[in-house]
Image 1 (cartoon, rainbow over the protein chains, first blue to last red):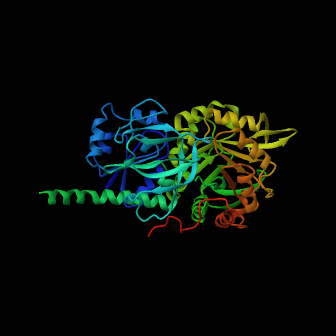
Image 2 (cartoon, rainbow over the protein chains, first blue to last red; image 1 turned 90 degrees about the horizontal axis):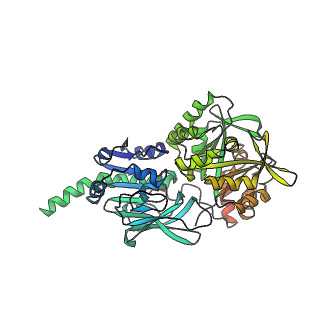
Image 3 (cartoon, chains in turn green, brown; image 1 turned 120 degrees about the vertical axis):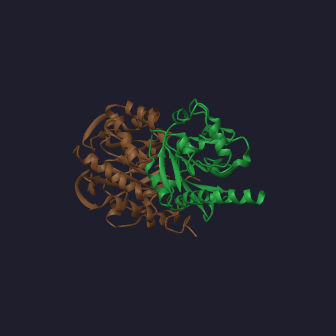
Length: 211
Length: 260
């Protein structure tokens, strides 16, 4: 099984790649969207600025959005989650727009929101087997989905609750860094990879029952 | 709730972890890759590598150590020491560092902080400040604490944050290695002035010192080194004492968020 790890050209991909490989998946680091959307699944990493990453998107983003809506598995981490939304206050440029909503600057006295924070989670396959989740963040911006039903996790910082995770089809966005969140974080990555492995057979099964 | 962090610092020289007092009398305490992994298992929230190598050749050694560390470490890794320009930042991040700390080079060329933050994001630029009491000011020093500058530590910390540093690593030269506690007035003065997280550094001897850094120093994180490397205490022990005092650090040990 091959997971694409998208390279916007800035930052640390190494430890995220190692965390994915530890689940027995093969990692292909790529800057080509054709390749990224043509393997078994895609991980959008989380380092850099929104504008910089948005410039790495092709002019026609509808094909990416359509592929993800059709169920191609994707995990967006931090900036990678923000890229799933329409736009960001951080910089110009359009996101993929898979999850309707905007990315806004954190309203807090100390920014970036840096360190380990508690996470409330909804029942979702990526959080399976995790009792109490405390995960590592390094973010100045947060996602505000238009439809609160797309949120699957929340954290509170300086008294304000924000969306820590969101989902659409088989795409998950996480504002924290699972690859930096020790044992629990690695479990989340393993859960995602397991979903990637299970999805083709589930799609096959639903096709058969539909016949 | 955001948890106060316990960060373990390893001084790395020519690929080995060393420890001295007030930046002098260095002795070998082990392999960085092994030690970093052990500290993650003990419950450390982050690891800092401070490269204290003098030679240019040591740069390749450091990149190799960072690369090997990132293969087995799944908590954040900050690397500092010897970063001279924005061009030095990219290779360290590519090798597997999450944040880069800059000290002397930022004093020489403050633009380095702005350029680094713009190119890689504020969250990976840490301004490292070494300060000592000097008359009625806390004076900044560069080059491992050996060269005085004209900069006031509180004002300089503010400028670093304004320029895009996402965090301040604040070391008291007077307290470093003394194990009598962090410099609380300095830590509080800087924490209260800037709107980015501050890491207290220099002087940790007991769990009480970490507690005071959080409560009286208003620090977001506390850096610990010597007392751990010498086996005087463990991250787990420090954290359980802090928890008992009502400081909500991230629980240490394998029970938290474990598989099964």
